[in-house]
Each structure stands twice: as structure tokens, then as C-alpha cells.
Length: 112
Image (cartoon, rainbow, N blue to C red; front, side, top):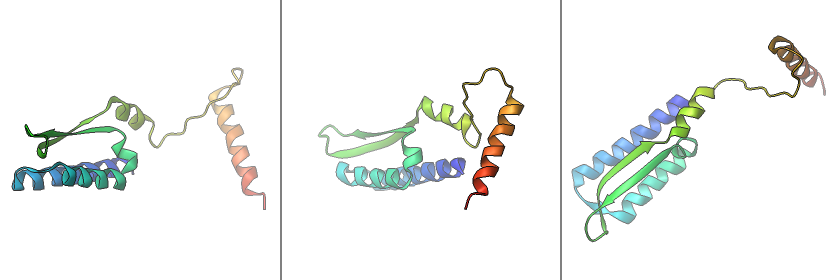
């Protein structure tokens, strides 16, 4: 699911970049609004990317759009879709911790 969100986020950025390059130079406010809408649509992905606008000499028009994946994305991607359990019990093994966890889940399901 995360991979699909990231793919769509990057596709939207690519489309924006392509439309900007066809039209040449665009106003900063308009490009920034479009970037903002993309970030709003994909908040879980936008936090892992640094998006930059390169401006012309007068700082009024956008010359190019670029983005960089932050290292924090790689860290979060390794745990996506995995269970992470933390316990203070050092005297029992992983199998026993899992068994105890599943008994908690089963007992919650039986409560009205």
C-alpha cells in the first residue's frame, strides 16, 4: 500500500514537472499551490521528500522543479507491513511473546 502511494505521489510530481517544462517558466505562486495540493493528497509520502523550486533571477518565476528522497524514507520502508513488539520481559523468547500477544487479541474479541 505504501509503495503504491509513493508511486502515485512521484507520478504526480513528474506530471507537474512535465507540464511546467512544456509551458516554460511559470509563476512561483501557481507552482507552489500545485505542489501543495500534491503534498496534501499524499501527506504520508510528502514528509519523506524535499521538494525544491529553482527560481529565475527576479525570484518571480519557476525555472525547474526537483525533489530528493530523505533518508528517513528508507528507514520507514524497512518496517512497513511488519509487526514490531516491544517488551520489558527479557526472560522469555520471541515465540512465547507472540503467544501471549495472540491470547490478548483473542480475549479482546470475545468482549461484548
